[in-house]
Amino acid sequence: MGKQNKSALNEQEGVSQNEITNTSSIEFIKQKRKTQPSSDDLVAHILQGDITALSRAITLVESKNPSHLEKANTIIKACLPHANNSIRIGITGVPGVGKSTFIETFGTHLTSLGKKVAVLAVDPSSSITKGSILGDKTRMEDLVKNDRAYIRPSASGNSLGGVARKTRETIILCEAAGFDTIIIETVGVGQSETAVHSMVDFFLLLKLAGAGDELQGIKRGIMEMADAIAINKADGDNIKKAKLAKVEFGSALHLYPEKSSSWQPKVSICSALHNEGIAEIWELIESYQKLTKANAYFEHKRKEQNKFWLMQTIEDRLKSDFFTNKKIKEALQYQLQLIERNETTPFAAADYLLGL
Image 1 (cartoon, rainbow, N blue to C red):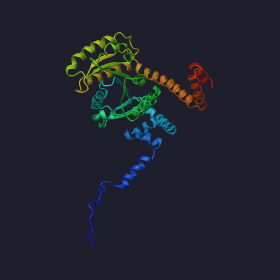
Image 2 (image 1 turned 135 degrees about the vertical axis):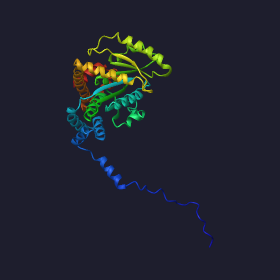
Image 3 (image 1 turned 120 degrees about the horizontal axis):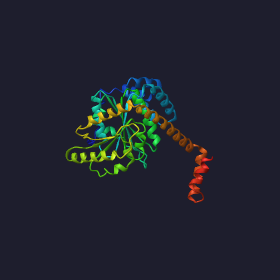
Image 4 (image 1 turned 180 degrees about the horizontal axis):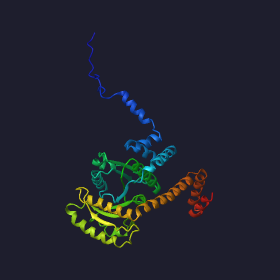
């Protein structure tokens, strides 16, 4: 009998399971994640400053599931008496102005003063893919590790009301969790800054020197909303340009009529990268808060904002109910076909649909 050839292939034992890993512990964690806490449990933990409970509650607020909406409303109502004890700061600027770096440096400065800071980053959603990157946390490496800070990115969606409801209710939850400084970041595109302006106490506009938009800034409506302008990246060779831009913007701001708050918007220069001029901006915000609380504008503005969002929420709800109506859906498709065949006008079709 011939000699049996030995195969070159052989099987080796795989990597043994890590002794530290406990299978029962993994199953326990999985089951715990599946278990949904009650509204009362979430509220109790939020009031104790529990970040996990806060994040879960915000997820419910952002959800479009009707059952989640009911639960979210219950949590909001329970947290409302514990809210309104913060300064809400809106920060906007064109992409590349250094918002993330500024917020990280600014937030770190505030936490060093004993403040608790919540950063709500409104990320624009793509009009094509409907998606959003939500990558702000990755660019605030130091702040995200700070125990006195909380960062929550959220997608803007495709409507002004989408930004509004989610962000406004998230503000209430963060305030109930003990955060006394709320920073809302938005990219200066579309309607997002209009929405953010109508839910904050102080609106800060970040600008770049030498970007060619100094005079353009005078024309833009966003300048009228700003309570202060900070010219960022004022370091190295850019300092001279930043100082010149400060003078130009300062002159431009004097062309606008006086604000009802009696506050004259200020212009300052800063370098978020080198932590220069950051403390001065916080002093500016404190001066604004002191003035507006003394002349009662601070509370008046918040009350007016609540009225505005009541009307906005009604409009959004009516629009949603209209387009989800089965009868309207069918009639709308027929009217669209008529418009394509030039058998009716958009205005006549709208009148017909609204009359159903």
